[in-house]
Image (cartoon, rainbow, N blue to C red; front, top):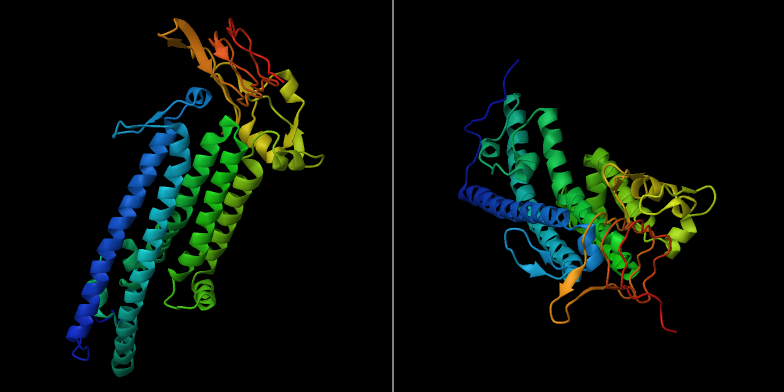
Length: 374
């Protein structure tokens, strides 16, 4: 079997084609730099989110950013950090779309030469410029020399997972991380961030696998070339939307109440509530993912996530040096279904705080202010 030729006198290496190759390689390096920054910010946010505890959410404590050591308020971090991430992600996608235009211009020239060479010699031919394109996995996937099906699959997965799925997952993590705070407005803001990212990926990402300038033509070209990955993307969009809008809910918000109807709900496992909470009907996926039964050994719910505060065996009281007493500002807080077993909350200001079905076994509430003035 003849091996593909990579050199022939029929190939014209004009300066324009060399300049186009250089433009593709320069754009590839720039796009890869932006991609690395996006991955770096992703890792940074994951570490930062992992450091936010239920105690921080209970006390609304400032977050100390990793490495930088800068203290940022809880609200500012959860509200503005996702916006920074969305704009960076948009910039990286747009940069890759510009790279695609250059790549397909180069591909057009190489394929014309390859077709002419095959017609003239009757032998398989790979244009030598394919071996000189940037090592960027995105550029290699579109314009590099032929690879095995397995390698091309991994290249596709790198594009899909890092430019499409991962940013959406990070934004969903912001929503889930702030969920135990029980702020419906904040949760809807996080949902809007997820929706915005989905729209950006849908309307900008569709141009990544195609040189078409029309949205519908680009969509058609992508569907014809990569139907499997478009199907996976559509499924991923559906799952993320379902989690953000139907599953990751604040207890009692209208979506939670609407879905907690017979046929869709099961009794909550009491992940952060007591025996009373176990009788609450909760949308089945929410109950399974966010309200698992409480594990006394670990002091955590058995579900993957949780949506109610769990602060156990913790001295959360802070000293007011000026007045010589302990104070915790929890006025008007939504502490429903929270587990605060054996925690020190003496002197806490719980004025108008909603403590419905909260577990306070052994909790020190000496001197705490309760009730709600009419």
